[in-house]
Amino acid sequence: MIKREKYISQIRNFYDSDLVKVIVGIRRCGKSVILQSVMEEIKEKSDNIIYLNFEKTVDLMKASNAIELVEYIEKHKRTGKCYIFLDEIQEVDDWQIAVKDLRLDSNNSIFITGSNSKLLSSEILTLLSGRFVSFRIRPFVYKEILEYCNQINKDITPIDYVIWGGFPARFNINDNESTKLYLEDLENTIVFNDLIKRYKIKKVVAFKKIVSYILMNNSRVYSSRSIHKNIKTQCENISLNTVIKYLDYLKDAYIIDEIPQYSTKAKKELSYYGKIYNADVCFNSLKVNNNRFDIDHNLENIVYNELLYMGYSVKLYDNNGKEIDFIATKNNKTYLIQVAYSVVDEKAYLREFGAFADMDNTNQKILITNDDIDFSTSTVRHIKLEDFLNLQEL
View (cartoon, rainbow, N blue to C red):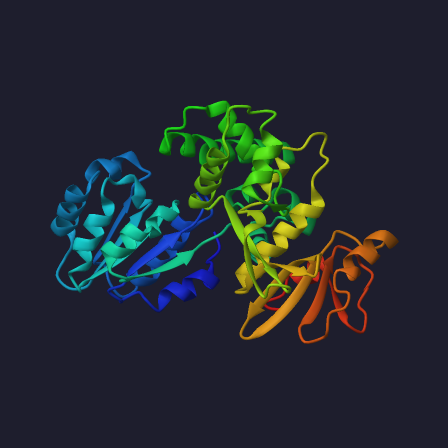
């Protein structure tokens, strides 16, 4: 497995800090591997290390609640700085109480991972009194995929990424059918079974229909009301509040992100609707028939994930009624970005370039497509998809 230096470099500055290092993200995105990489670096200077992976029954039996966890660590740590690694800690009852107590010892350096944003809930933030730093981990982006596939001597293309996404373990599978089976099992586990169990969902069939609808409508403007309106023919007894609740479950598990729209008219964010992006585009591709993959929306979703990896803050942009896919900001530089699979067709060309109509050149305007032809103009910079995927910044 590759060393994901982009993330590790951010964590490295806090190795000896008494701040709790909180590593979060969707399950199977590689949090445990990053934790292992951090441990390997620390082992070069210390062997006073305790590691527990609470997805393993043998470790959960050692400490299934706060009291047992504190007792276990106090019994096994040595004198001096102790590095404590607690993987998927949400499985431990009242874990936040244990972490609070362990943090009181300045000789403890604590690292925790989890797959639920409740790790950062207001209650826990209050309990930790702000004494933590968090790191969001995501599935592989294309640069990481190339690095890993080079390591295992495997060829990969941008379109493979746009269809099947970046969950790390899938790249050890050599054919599409087996890849699809693996990803279907992954989805059943982390999207459906985990959430049904965690939230004790009774209307399982309705839950699966609503969640599937949400995941296959990535990169689209939405509101909770529009989802409810479109799904109620399939789920007659489901309320708007239930739809909102299910959306929150998906966000809490890092399965989807929601970004707001920024309006030029109101000069503010509009909270009543925005866009949803999947943590990984495979959640869309698994739901298509006859291999009619939703390339256009998946491509936009991929660009969103890549922009976040590059460190950009991203919102949807409204240019007086014309939707621009992203307004991306970093280091006081702002970019307006349109994404399309191709603009070879005249209608597509006019639509995508037309989104920038009547805008001044204060901010750079960018169009990203899979076309080989350079469609750059005097005011719009065209970036070919593969070139964009290899950029470190815009």
